[in-house]
Length: 487
Image 1 (tube, one colour):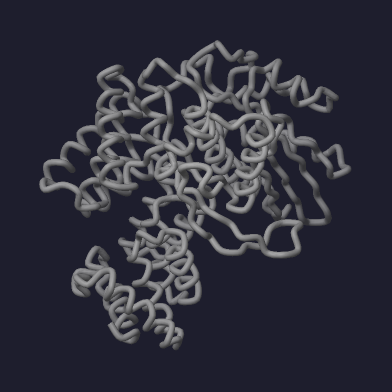
Image 2: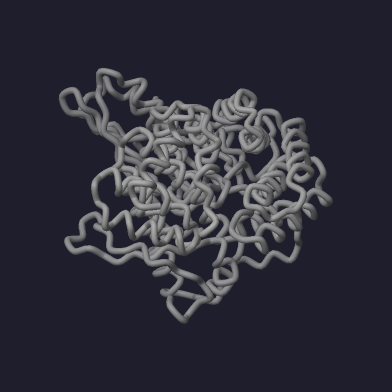
């Protein structure tokens, strides 16, 4: 696509792909910098469009989940009871808000044992329930898809009957004391597989495995669908600028991408709130944009702006208390204010409402790191980045720091180096890279990172670095590694 589209691509290096012997060079597209370029994709027709869609689907497999937006909180109000995942009625495309409709087909039991049929049904139901927690999706109820179990109907026919834009199907296999669950997501219109993966577990703890896999599948599915829906939004002519359209545009821009992008998001969300003052998600996203403006130093009045962001987050909670958006935004704000206990409560509420929310998990990981719970921080951040590998760079950075403080220097260096490659405009990755390389005795490598720190962050204050940690031993250990590196 070089010189063909106004899309900025970053070299992610050579990667080993499934069923391909030789490494393939991969490029990453930044959604925030490519919104204009995506519009031009609308002009591509026929085979070129199909090839582009297939290429993006391939990228999704490599990254586990295709790049989601900076936050992927719900895109609509709390659905009416008839719109809930538990509804057994067939949902038609015109029966509610313009949200993407997903049908989860009954998972196939390939164990050879009919007695395991209950387990396949259980996985299906858990995935439906987990996806139902994402307010930006509408999920066909279990009873509506049950009639297709064991049938010969083609996916295109099922999608047409149910009015579904996306289909999820999978299978269960077991051997001795192990079980394997496979799942894939298909774009019903294009008959293209957008994502697929498989999971292995122990039959001795089958129900815990079933629950965790359902959450994992739901998180990655929602990330894929969110990104595809945004791409579709820009390909389609939408003359009416309603609040939902404005929300999609704001997510495509990204509130932390740049000062210009942040201003655009704030303007879009302000207009959306004027159109619909009771749209909870727009209040939450405007609060997050103002929060980013504060933490990135883009305002002269941080206290006043942070107070406004908190007001918006609490307004979102008041409008939709059972949606995670407002709780997650409030958790971010309370964390930056070092009100850790209240931040923990807000984030836990967001995660209780949606255990597959990558952003809420990432913010909780940051809080756990600051609070001294390094194992918990690593677990939360790893899970968040598994659901959505393209989260904001600060969470990749927080994982690298958590690894370093836990004395997992190889892991810290690996994540930091990946961050340097993937996020070239985020120089802070050189800090854990330098410290970890020094602790590993790789002095020449550490010196290179120190050189970058001096060149790109000449005003870095070692006394301020790590000051957010409650345990004074953490910043001391970080400074020790940097001094060993020669800083």
